[in-house]
Length: 77
Image 1 (tube, rainbow, N blue to C red):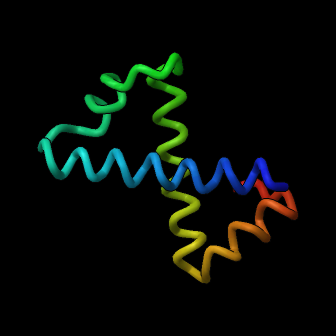
Image 2: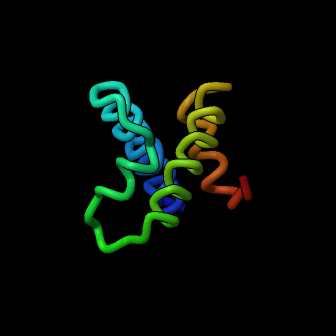
């Protein structure tokens, strides 16, 4: 449960960071993701950012507790 919740919060953080860099540098998100050197592929990072968007919407619909409930119930999004 806690690992799922941590994954959700980290995806939201990555998405926010990518959006922030996009606004500051006027670059496309794909360009920014290609420049990140984490040992993860561009495709994986893109999936993390997309998951972050889903989790943002879920948390925005209610509260951060919606993410905790989704993590506990192993809800597939």
